[in-house]
Length: 84
Image (cartoon, rainbow, N blue to C red; front, side, top):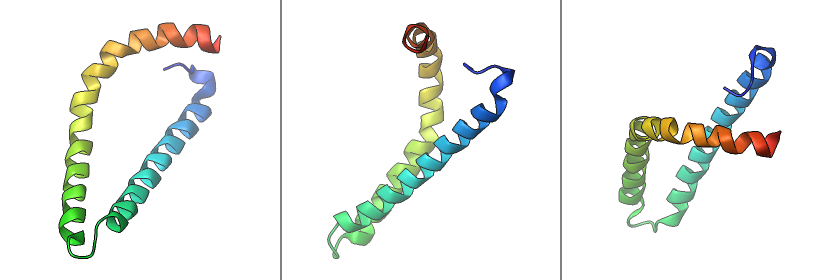
């Protein structure tokens, strides 16, 4: 990672904040999708949205893993001039 062993607490704090914001966003989208559909199709629409969200969250580790490996070297090259 970018932070060494000196910044272990900061690394853990930012990782936990990231997980918190992802969970909050998922909950907000879930509530928003229930308001999006009309009453007649709400259960089918919400069920379909929930299934799509669960499948995509399971597939993200398989799809994102190789992409992160390919892009990670470029991110380091870009982040050092930007952040110093």
